[in-house]
Amino acid sequence: DIGLDLLERNPSIRVGRFAEHRAQVGADQLAGANGVIVLTPSITAASVADAGELLAIGRFGVGYDSVDVQACSDADVLVCITAGAVDRPVAEATIGWMIALTHHMVVKDKLARDARWDERNQYMGCELRDRTLGIVGLGRIAGKLVEMLQGWGMRQTLAYDPHADAAVAKKLGVRLTDLDEVLQTSDFVSIHCPLTERTRGLIGRRELALMRPDAYLINTARGGIVDEDALYDALQEKRIAGAALDCFATEPLSEPSRFREFENVLLAPHSIAWTHEMFRDIGRSACQAMVDLAERRVPRGIVNPQVLEQPGFQQKWKRICG
Image (cartoon, rainbow, N blue to C red; front, side, top):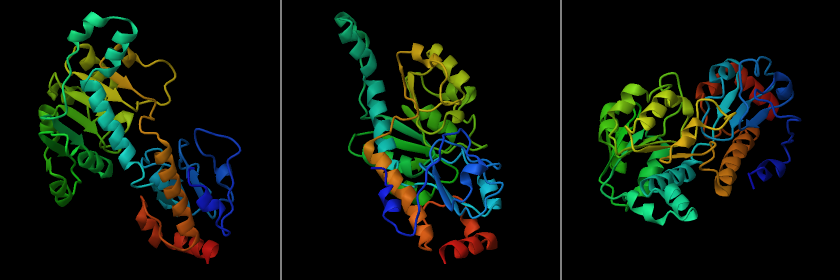
């Protein structure tokens, strides 16, 4: 169940599927479509060069760095994301990684499998209580993470986000501060910001050098936010305690990751939060946006809301949906 029934049971909507999967959606694939839902393919200026009667691009997820939003806006095309649909699964997966890292779960599993029983005293772990969580990007996912960690006895939560709502942070019990303090103070640095030109390479050599040697870096956002060469060197030189990476600068990986050599690093192929529930909720949200447009309602999760007021969009919307 990924929500497609919302489209299929609506008599005013006809559903089609791309005949082939491409890395970049072609203009020919969009021909005749009023709305398109995509997961991995990118949407470029060439994709929407001849947008025709296309009203909206729906991202099957919350990240939209694979979509040329400006090109879509210029073509009178809305870009929608599934805001809120991934909050809980990503937060839950982040907590799972925090526990797995601090309790050395992967290593201890291997010790038992290999009958290396006497080595267990070399891997004393630590609990989440009395620890400091540092967040980079205090959006909905990070907010859910903070909520879910209540009751675990953590000391405090710090966050760096120039765009954060101070009232929201206060309600969550999060202290807003600068990036340097987050890195210098936290036991866990968890990244939850979008990949933009401002955040690309945000965590580099200087930033990693600020982290404590007993601190962990967790990235469930986008790979380009972290300088992978700098992170590799920091791990090799044991300047941080470990890391968990769900995303990489280049995806998909075409060869085994160099980070696999570290026993204090956890890796996932950009799917650590994938659950049946998450795909159900994302699908329902993405499909509901298309239903809303078909029924002349403004959908949730619009990235470029100014398009709603553009005459070209308004004219298309009226022609298509009455």
